[in-house]
Structure formats: structure tokens, C-alpha cells
View (cartoon, rainbow over the protein chains, first blue to last red):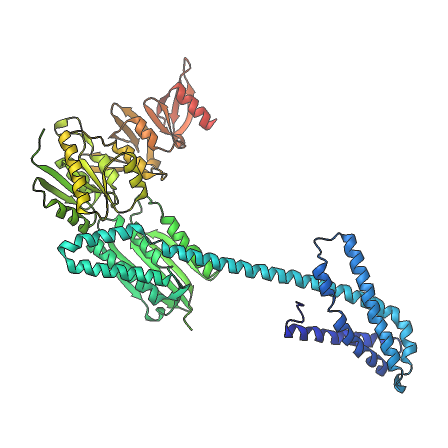
Length: 352
Length: 259
């Protein structure tokens, strides 16, 4: 489709462009000694005609690509097209002038147009080539935009795939250990065994349900985290204490689905479970000047040998955050005084 | 040798998981539970002091994992007898590398959650092993090497009595063979560990550590230069001035690595 004809604003801008061009034609004519009436009478239909004719190089631009043709071919094709098109334009000028000559006030037009024809023709050629260059530029821009859109589309698809993978990637170590806890509880405390069964199914259902969506309210993501931590608290007993500090206004903030859950799993796997005495896991969400800050802070033994997977889990979270909010987010991770801390900062968006 | 009672140690960092093993053992009056340990340090202390017959050992634990625990408690038996090791039943929830290691070395293990039947089976096997007094178990260091998979060794653990010391490989100056032991030199101190030099050599990254002699392994970054002695023999000079002999094959390997 023609890029100018498909958009109303572009068409309007294009037509407005022809007003000064028409003015230029009239000015040139008056410099040749034409009367104002004669100049305007011819310039107006010429501008209208030109606006129509000079839409056409676009189609030739589409067919004749700059990349595939030799310079010589380009020169011949465009030269020929420009001469023919401009010839047609100046030819119609001559016809219009003859028609207008029938009016008394414009009777001199047919004589005056003849010496002006070479000038009109050359002007037409220049206009034709300029518009061709303009269309080439437009096509290149369109192509770049399309590539960008495709890239975005691809990235979204990749993110969705990643999300699906995340959902499927239920931590087997966690699952089997939880089942083992249930197995242990059935004979000693059947009530708690049932409670743990329910917590585990609640967690599974929530994580399967969340995975269907690209983003969720922080409240929902934290519900999942809560279900997860209640199970881990049964497993770890006194070793796991959780301190929640979630600002009420942060609960509605939208977050990419399953972005925070891996951070908490990480804090358990590499923090609490690696310490015989365990400790306090702190979760904090605050809102300041339109940005959400989420902090996971856990005791950690820095000297413990690195377990496989620490870098990977955090890297995935960072990539997803960057993919979702390019240039508008921050990811910090580091050790300080026996604790490991991850801080995420991203723009506040809420459900409509 | 017939046995009426078996002493046992239960090692798991989760209280509920220990409880489950304890519960299964309740129907066996012949088993005496000596202690339950919540982490590797406790396990090493209890096992080296009390020398249990049976060991129920979780793999994933804070500080020291199950493999490191076994590595540290294996050694001369009660009264300085021959090689001693408790009959061990490994327990793990999900660890592909560990399972591969068990399969490769034909060691019995339990996967959490386990059935009573499966537990009884493992217990019977462990008891039989204990009675026969023969441990077909591989050297613990080999088992832990197999379980680590492609994850490189970062530290060595040594035990003196019930005190456990970690030696970071970055701080290891060199290693010298001493009969059945290796002597680890680090920061001006030396530690003895019951392991052969060859088995340690296999655990170390060959790009960082080189066995330059039948009795020596040195970290390549500690080496400053080589001195040629009389009769085609070479001496390695380390950063701190220590001189170590280099064998002919050690010299050839060095030349290949450093050029």
C-alpha cells in the first residue's frame, strides 16, 4: 500500500507541501512577466495535477530496488521515467493553458506557455527525482519499523516460552523433600500432614495458574511466595523465619509473572538451607515516586562453596526484568555483613 | 562374626526427615540409635567419636555435604584397626549427580520419600555388610568426585580429631605424599589427610595442578622457575622459595603445559 494514501495525516501533510510548490510555480511565472491572474490560474491546476502525478514514483521504487540494480540501470530507468512523467506534466500544463485561453482575461496564456515549457519540464524532472528519493527513504524507514516490530514480537514470544518453561520447572528438590515431610508427618501428626498436603496443592495450583499470564499484581505473586514459604517453614522448622514488609500500596503493582518466586527459592536454597542455624528471610516492597522496589534479603554463608545454579537463577530474573522494562529498571545483587541481598527496581504500573 | 546389636547414626538437616528414619527403626530393637545429627559437623564429631555400625546419611546439608562427611570419618577403625567405614545408607531427595555416582559405584541409596519396604531392604543390606565386615563401598573421595560431576572441586576438607578444617584450593601451596596420606601445605601450615596422591590428583583440575613427581603435586600459579641440576634432573622453585624435585615425566608435562 502507498504510505501516503494509507494515513490521513500523511496525506494532509503531503497536500500542504504542494501549497508552497504551487506558490513557487506562480512566482516563477510572474517573474517571466505573467499577470497575477494568469500565474495563479495555471499554478493551481498544475499543483493539483502534480500532487497526483508525483505519488506514482513510489510504485516504481517498490519494483526497482536500489540494492539489486546496477548504477547504470538505475540511471536509465529513473532518467527515462522522470523525463516521461515530467513531460506528461508539462504537456498537461500546455493543454490547460489552451483551455484557459478561451476566457477573455486569460487569452494570452496559450502564447505565454510555450516558452515556459522547457522550464516546467526540467522542474518536473527535478520534482520527480526528489520524490523518488523521498519514497526510497520512506520504504527504508518502513522496513526498519517492520523489523523492529518483528523483533519485539519475537522477544515477546521468547518471553512467553520462557514463562512456560518456568512454570514447568517446578523445583524437584523442593517437591520431593515436601513429600518426604508429609510422609514423616502422617504417623506423628496427621493433622499437620493434611495441612501440608493442602499447602502443597495450593502452591502447585497457584504456580500453574499464574504461568498462564504474562503479568500479575504483586499481591498474587506474593500469595504464591507465601504458600511456598509456609511449606518450607514446616520443613525447616525454627531455621526459617520470615519478616514481611510489604507496603499496602505496592500490592496492586504489576510484576512479570514468576519473577519474584525464583528469588525467594534462591534465598532458601543458597541461604537458609546452607546454614545450620538458619535465620530470618526479609521480603520488602516499597513504592517511591512511581517506582517499585522489591528486596529479598537473607542470611548467607559467603565462604560456602558455590552450589551450581546460583548465578543462573539470578541471571534469568535479571534478563526477564530487563526484557520487560528496558532502561527503566535496576537489578542489584550482593553480599553484605553475612547477608545476601537482591534489590529489584522497576516502574509502577497497575491494573486498569 | 554375629552381631546382636547395631549402633546407628541418623544425619539429616531436617527434623522431620530424621524423625521418619527414627520411626522406621523403631520396629528394630536390635538397632541402637547413638545420635541424630542436624549438620555435617555434628555428624563428623559423632561418627568419629562413637564409630557407629550404620549411618543414615542425607546428601544435601549445610556446611558439609554427605559425601564430605563420609570422606572425613573414614579412617583407621576402633583401636587403630584396619580401614573403617560405617555401612552407609545414602538418602537424597533429588540430585542427578549423586544418583549417578551411586549407580556407578553400586552403592545403595534411598530416594525421598521412600516406602517402608524399600527402607527395610536398604537396612537389611547395610546390616549384612556390617556383619560380613566387608565394605565394597568405593573410596569416599571417588564417590564425591563422581557426584560432583563437572562442577570443579573448590576446597578440601580435613579432620583433626573432631575438628574440621576447610582448605581453599586457591591457598594450597603444594601437596606431598606421605605413605597412605597426603600432606597439604597451606599458609605455612600442613595438614594430613587420608587419601592417596593419585586419587587427589584425579580430583584436581589438571589445568591448575600438576603432579610433577611421584610424591608431589603443585599448583602451577605457585611455580616461579625451574633449575637444572646435575645429571638431567630438575628442581621447581615455588614463589615462597620452596624447592621441589621434578621427575623426568613431570618435566615433560610441565614443558607441554607451559611451553
